[in-house]
Amino acid sequence: MSWETDNALKRIFNSFKRLKNQIFIQDIDALKLLDDYILEADRKRINDNQLFAKLLCFVLYRNVEHFKDIKQAIKSIQTEVFNGSMEEHIELLKLHLNKNDFDEYLKSLNLIHVEFTDEEDNENLEKLTKNQKEVIGKLKKFWNHDKVEKSFYNTANQMLNDINNYK
Image (cartoon, rainbow, N blue to C red; front, side):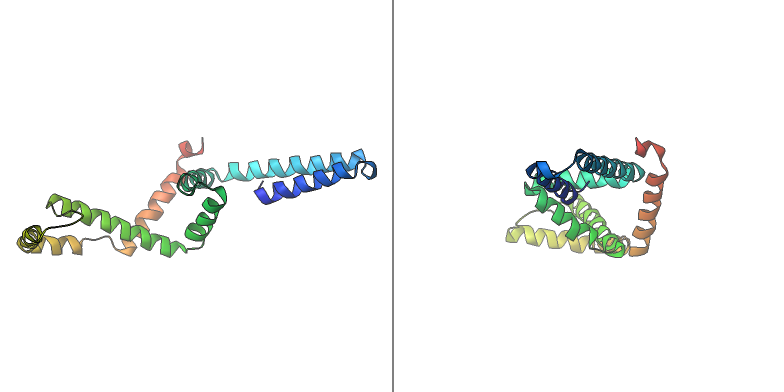
């Protein structure tokens, strides 16, 4: 049950409490039955979508840890995750994969620093010039959108088909 639905039910329960003499026991029982039905339907829906629920919970607790506020955590998920198209998410994944690969390559050449001195800049330029063909080859082997998309869908389908992910 969403927080909105939960708050709506609490509001009705509180109204019933204030109007004790005008509310019949059958009204209260009917409201409790609806509350139980909604909770059960929500649990069933989550059980039918366990992978989504696990991923959402993971992102949610990471966002709560970051923002220190549940409302901001949910808003962030809605704006950053759910508003983007699948193509946009795959493109972002591609950019991050390429960045990580290139950062690792630069590390192998000892070119990762926050700030360089002039002397280090000259040394880095020499290293890049010396490895120019390798750098260009590395850039040509960057992940492309089609490769990332195909790999993503293969990985997603493997996870969806793996029954161990539904425990």
